[in-house]
Length: 299
Image 1 (spheres, helix red, strand yellow):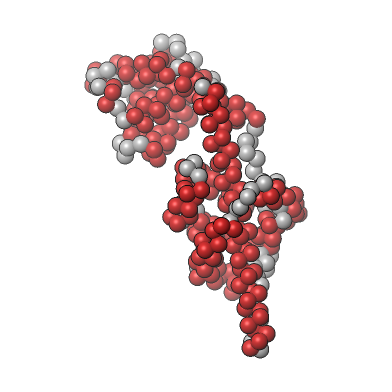
Image 2: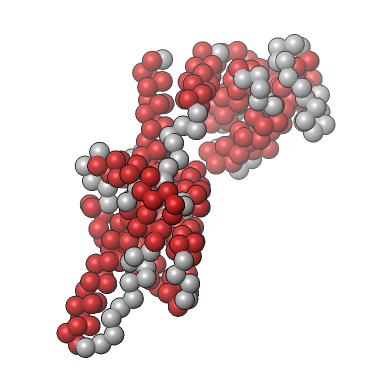
């Protein structure tokens, strides 16, 4: 149990590493842009042509991010960040240069901090958030990151929106845990899920007793097991919040039909647990559904 819990906490810390890595990617692309500008300036001097624009290479938001103390502390503790992926960074920069977002930014006269920050929000959503090549690259770096990236992307975008030029290099990044209770929540949920597995699976088996429980998708069982642990361990979380959360997880990690099935199962089990006094929560926020016993009869 202790080893498994350490692995859980390690996986959460890897998600925070990914958050910093993706912020550092903005800095890496910006440095690549400066390299292009320097080459273009040298050519312009030789040929006597107009000097290139420095607008993107010296984007005000990107400079603030590059100077950020927390991000630099992270980079300083890593052997490599994006230095080993120069070709990917250069290709991404090329895609940015070709994008309509970049073209419109370079053509506008708006040189405000807000415009510079908004540019990177748009670029991130358009070219980094859904990038199959990046997904493959990250999977090579860590087995955890493929699953983590979707949620970490939302953290990066939130961070971009929060940056304020008044904070300079001391702008706070998002913390690894919003509150210390979050880490305790993860541990408590993990232990409850494992230690009470037999009981939770009995609830599931009873709710599907006209089916062969062993034929349920394994991931469905795991997801419902964690959901029941949350319902029974954390009294302040409404039943509907728990069900909705784990139905969404099922859509990502299980079969196409799992969301609807898990929704019905958890709803019925929760009502049964409340009715029998095993779960001291209200079912008022749940939609009217079939009785637990009716579901058993129908299988």
